[in-house]
Each structure stands twice: as C-alpha cells, then as structure tokens.
Image (cartoon, rainbow over all chains, first blue to last red):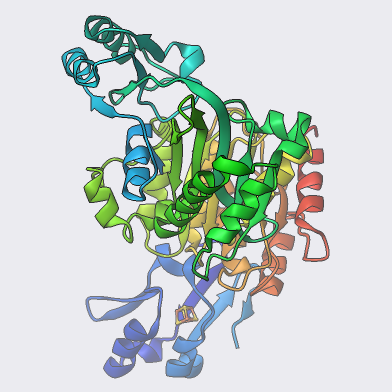
Length: 76
Length: 400
Ligand code: SF4
C-alpha cells in the first residue's frame, strides 16, 4: 500500500491504445504500466510520484493523482 | 585517500625535494639488502596509514644489515592501530641539527590553501601553536594563480629564519605547495624537515592525503605509484553497517546516500547537502549529541533510497531517534525526503513522530514537505532556525 500518493485511472483510458502508451512513456518514475492490454498503476512506484503533472497533461481528467497526505487532494 | 610515507617521498622526489637514501622493503631479506646497500646506520619505519608509529614500536634503528633484518621482521609482524604494515621503509640515518615543520592544507575559513611553517618541527604542531605561537606561520595563497616562490619565502621568513637556511627551505616549501596543487592533495606535510649537521636541508618524513574524487584525474600518478583502483586506502575495513550503506546507495541511481560511516552514538543522522553534513555532524557533537553515524544524502534521492537509508540507520542497536537535517537545498526535494524518512520509520516499525527528533530541510518543495510531516506529527523547522539550533533541539530530545 502506498502511503502518500495514489493514482486513479478512468475506465475510458483502457479503450484508448495511444493514450495508454503515452502514459507509460511520460511518467518519469514508471507509475503506469501495461498488464497485458490493461493500464495499471504500479503500486511500488506510487510514492515516488514527483507531482510533475505530465500524466494529467496527457490524459486530462481521465487520470487522477491523489495526495493522501493532503486530505486526498487531487493534483490539479 | 592517504599515501604511505614511501609513496609521499616518491612524490617529493619528483619535485626535487632532497631526501635520505631509502628503499621500500616487503620482507626482512629485502630490508637486509637495503641496509647493506646504504652501508651505514639505518632507520626502519613501518609503512602504515595511521599515526603513532614511534610509540607503537613501528620505528627501529639498526647499525648493521643483520640487525636491520631482525628489526624488519619485528616491524612487519606488528599491527598498528588495527593495520598490518604494507612494508618497511629502510632509510639512511642522518644527524640532525635543527628540525622544521612544513605543511600545505586547506584553510576552510579563508577558502584558500595555507602554508603552515614552523622552526619547531618534529613535535606535535598543535602543541607548538598553543605554546609557541610566534614559532608558527600561516600563509594563504591563491589556488588559481601560478604559485610564487615569494609566498614560500614569506612563510619561512615569518618565523625568523634568515641566512643560509632561508633559500633552501623556501625552495622545499615552494615545491611542497606546487605538489599540493598539482596532485589535488588535501594535505602535504613534511615533518620533520631538517637541517643536518653538514648544513644541508632534507625531508625526513612526509604525509600526504589526496582528494578521493581526484583519483580519476590523478590516474597517471597513481599508476606511477602502483596504486590500483581496488586499493581504497580506508583507515580501517568497512563495518557491515557501512557496507549496507554503500548497498543502499548503489541499489538506486537516483540521488546519493553516500559516505555512510558508523559511530558509537545513539542519535541516527540522515543529513546532507553540499558540505552540510560535516557542519551538521559537528553541530550535533557541539550540542553534546552522540552521532550513531555520518552520511551524505542529497542530489534528489528517490523516496525508496531515503527510506532504505533511514531503515538502515534505525537498525543500528541503541538508535532511538534520528535527526533529518540539511542546509537550504535546491537540488533535493524536501517533500521526497519527508516521504522517505517517514516510510523508513514505518517500515522499521517505528512511530515517525517519536522517532524523528527534528526535520530541517528548507528549500525546494518545502510546503509539500510540511503537509506530509504535519500528517505524521513530525516537528519541522524552516530556514529561520539555524543548523546549529536545529541540531541543539534534536539533541535536547534525546533524553525524552
Ligand atoms: S504526476 Fe508525474 S510522476 Fe506522478 S504519476 Fe503523473 S506523470 Fe507520474
């Protein structure tokens, strides 16, 4: 279980092959990975999230980065 | 990294510094042959990296090759401060009329190299500084301009040296300063530098430390001295704690968790930032604290690396609390460090609020760090609290 950060991936992402590939590529700390056809958040890497927003730039509100230490605030 | 005396003398010889006839011997038989070649009284000196050779019995005198062989066997079997000698230096024995001290090192306050010279050599220079301050000179110089012999002359003449000694001493001190600059040394020392009974000047013992980071740049010299990369020249073998510290660092390329050194104290330190580690370590000791370790964490380590270092420090028996402190940082994120040390505490089964005596990492992403620390009830101080004050507060909590 991550302590500080969690990431939510909307179902709409799973049907967008290009976006899934882009998310895997943009995250500097490998938080996104393909598990077969499915895009998942890598549990062990979640706390390494740098809050860089690159995933949000790519996916908009289809991805949510949540700061567990800040009242579950969403990274905007 | 420290050079053995015989290596330091090889470096001095390259600069034309007068030295006694000498041979480095690895066996009693080699020592016997060396003494025979010198054909006169010799001194045999244990080649260890630590001081205190004389007191430990690592320096013996011989008038003939057979005695030299016997003494060499004694010295080669003698461990000094936990170190086995690398060999024995067999050197001609000379009659001394006067002893001097000459060293070049860094003056941290002046931020320049400094020549320290005294006409009272052969004894502890700190003692001379205390009891005979008029017999010691300190002369700083620029490391970025060509070294001028005039600076060496000022250093020598400042303690009252005149006449026939001034010119040869100046030449040797100038050579020492150039050696210091050319080979990236942190210390180049000749003690004693002597006037012999025939009036000539000679370096009888020498001590040199080279910047660890200069090993690459000084590869040519190290090859000449036959020092392989595997020869780390540590004063003692690393402890398991220190080996584990190196593993924490090498397991993850992000950031640095380096130079983990074990001490006997009860206060774990997770400290760093461009020289800040040394200041903070001293500050903890100055406040009466007993550090359990030294380390240098920085360069934006991953959360995992900070957590693993924290866990390692907390695994040391007797460590009740840790102090997490840095100078003001721009290249390390305070929030990632906060995540790391808290994760490390929790992984070690500790309560962060009870375990982290203080967290002082002012700088980038500090606001985010504060939110994390508040969530876990850890005391945070910002840059308005000096490193010394923060160290004092951490030490004060150790009794609680
Ligand atoms: S904010 Fe950056 S580091 Fe965090 S999940 Fe998104 S891309 Fe990865």
